[in-house]
Image (cartoon, rainbow, N blue to C red):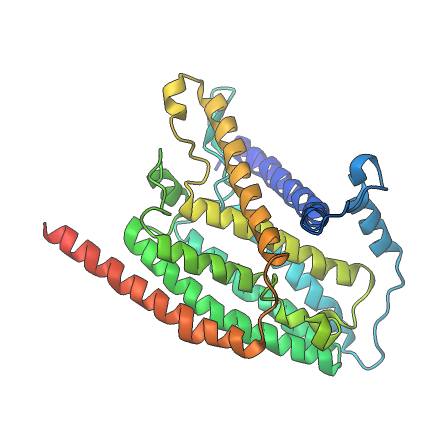
Length: 343
C-alpha cells in the first residue's frame, strides 16, 4: 500500500466514522417520528424546523447531565464497560463494502476500508466482544438489577449468535467465500442471496434483532422489570454511549443484512445505462444506503408493533426454534449443492 492509497483509506475511514455517527444520531429522531406516526401524534417538532435539531439537543442534554459513579461500583470497569460497547460498535463498519470503485487522478480506489478474506468472521468477532461491554457495565455497577440485565444480555446473545452463525454457514455454502466484497460481487444484477437463502435471511434477521437488544428482544434493559437493566446506574455520556451504541449496531446490522442478502451496492440494470464508473459507484452507494434505511425502518416498525417477549419465550425461540431451523437450513443447502455438483 503506497502513500496515496493510505491517505485515501484514512480519509474514507473518517468519512465512514462521521456518517455512522450522523446516521445513528438521526436514527433517534427517525424512531421518534415513526413511533409518533404509528401512535397518531406529532413527535419532536420544537428544536429546529420539523424538530431536526432534536438529536443535537439530546446530545447536549447528555453532556450537561451530572455524572454519578456509585461509591460501591468498580470505578475502572464502570468506565470501561460503555467504552467497549461504543468501540466495538464503530469497528464493525471497516469491512463493509460501501460502494464499488472510483477513479481519482487516474488511480482506482475501492470504497471499502479493509477487504478481509474473513470479513464475516471479523463482524462476528466484533459483535461477540460487544457483549463484554454490557457484562462489565452490569457487573461493575454493583446493582442487582444491572447484574440481572447483564446476565440476560449474555445468555441472549450467546443463544442467538449460534443460530446467526449457522445461518451464515448456509450462506457460505452458497457463495463459497467469507469475503464481504466477494459476496457482494456475486450478487451482481438481481442475483441477490435473499432468493437463494430465504430461510437463512429470516433466521439472520430475527437474530439481528436479538443481538442489538431491540424490542421485542430488549429483555436486558426491560424497564418494567429491571428499571434500566445493565445501565441502571449510568448517567451523563456513559449512559449516552450505551444508548448510542445500540443505534450504531442497528445501522451496522442493517448494512450487513443489505450486504449479505440484498446485493449490497448492486443496483439492477445500472450497467445498461452507459454511465461512467464514478457515476455508477455513487448511484450504487446511494442505492445501498436506501436498502440500509429500509432495514432501519423495519427495525423501528417491529419495535412499535410487537410486544416484548417473556424471558422463557425468548430462550425457547432461540434454542428450540431458530437453532433447529438453522441446522435444517444447513443440511438442506448442503444436500441441494451436493446433488447439483453430481449433475
